[in-house]
Image 1: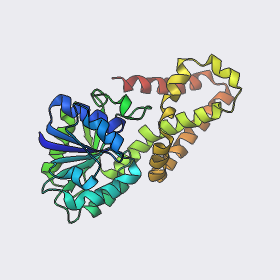
Image 2 (image 1 turned 90 degrees about the vertical axis):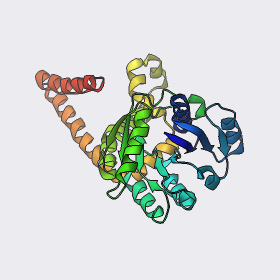
Image 3 (image 1 turned 60 degrees about the vertical axis):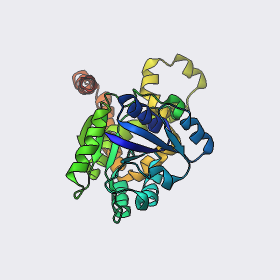
Length: 283
């Protein structure tokens, strides 16, 4: 599909994408950019990296597709830096969990560039971080949301969709604003709740940890995610997440009142809706 792909950032998702692209033979050559020389050297030793590069501008030259896999706070500034060095028709995307502000910033930065930026969010993270946990299977069968702006070229939108589908992802198209609303409820709120529950339980008797079962471990697994990364996501999507929290508070208060009222049927009905929702997620 592409002569050369540049992946900026070699963490869990960046390395996993490189592995997947290499395995699926989507690009003739894969360039990995990283800030540290040790990381560049490590990437260069892998079969899924044809060249490691410390220089950001050099890393995108000659590429048909650039994928930015760095923390959300840095994506806008990286696009601004690489924009003058892109060849005509180069497609640039990212993997950020927040889209509206990133897409607005990048649209502005790409105004005089030869390339085109279209946002992406592959929903394929993990509570683990770092290249050592990367896998070519990480994105397989997962959802990916692409978030084109109104004036983005149709052929480039289609090309981006085809790329993610070639990695066996289920692709959806949302506006950047709709993405951030949906992600606040279906991605950011679950992580927030897992983190809050873990933090709260940390204040309880330390001996009680010994009775923890798989239920608690499953419920709080994602709280293990990188705190710095999630702090950035929460702050960048603050308003949408605050709305999601307010809605959840209403649901929690509803359950609290049902429990106080001792109405078995209503309480069971409440729990049944939650049970059915969870079963639907696996279909």
